[in-house]
Length: 59
Image (cartoon, rainbow, N blue to C red; front, side):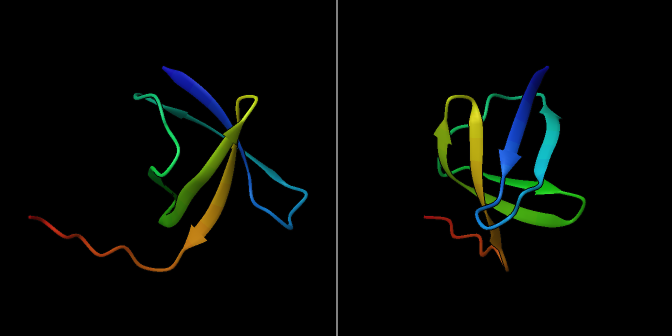
């Protein structure tokens, strides 16, 4: 189990959560029906951007 700490730019609040998989930049996570895009990772801190809608595209 991996534990993560996330932050949203412009907010003083942190999000703490656990995941069964390791997360990387450009991944999208869903927490309580809210979607977040991992913009970058700095010293174990995930910088998140809120996402409105995700469209699946397959090739």
